[in-house]
Length: 436
Image (cartoon, rainbow, N blue to C red; front, side):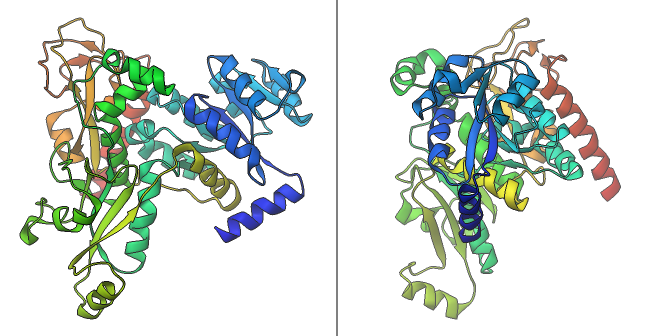
């Protein structure tokens, strides 16, 4: 962090800001605009949002006047505006990857379809891309990461979300040679798998959120996606489909979130999970060591009697931390967290009885919620990833609570993320055949 601060302060002194484009200017995106305006060396100077007034409002909040804000759908006009020190707002998300003045993009829509398109175009146009959109990464991030590596740009999931926050604790433990047994997060509301946007509407409007976005938190989909991201970055697996999600407070994590053979919950030795106890908005890692001297030292350092210990970070700051990922990508070519292997899948489960002809409305909607499975188990079930199920047509009856399979639905073949997922599946199968 010291080196990062030095580089950013140098750029600030030289007025050479890293120029960043933002796709999606909701609650998190607008907060990021305000934050980066106070940061050294980095600015969001272009915003894409279907509601252009949200981008205009965000720029005005930090002091830009009407004469400083250019609303356009043309690449050249956007480029010229940035060259003159102005800022740009556009309703066209795929305009931003084509603007030469931008060094990186942040994708913050939460939509796998939009996220896949923006990430792909960013890579093709030589732009670093930071995903504040974990839903896209757990769907096609394996492929996007490999294409970005070949193209010589950074593709990464953002710091600030729970995966980006907890990965630092995991790496800390592993660097010191400890054995990690659980990587987890807190969930600050009870899971209601069958929640709908209508049920969440009043609270969402009060909080300034989209009801579908809040519903994706309440129905557990966001938690499943976040922990699948951690799984795919580390190799940890869900102990059971959907994880345990026990109500365990921080002091008890090292007693409960451990293997069964030692009195805990888990059959597996290395897992991802979440707690509905007093953990949120924090993240945690439970680790152990078999070295008596180290156990003695850990007790001296007030880490407890062992043999299991908890590392706990009591916060994650969501989009506030995203610019750190942007700066690391642009200055050092360093990603924050990626799906480096396919260990877990988030599959679609019916929220209600689905009938032939129904068109599925996707994440946070009325029709499905996401549930984490080990990737191998999901594949045996022929389960459909939740990231590609939007606009799929139901072919045969699916009862409430059942996992949707590829035989149950006809996917939307016009969807970009569906086509990327098909390519990813082919390449994964080819790699597996080579290994065998």
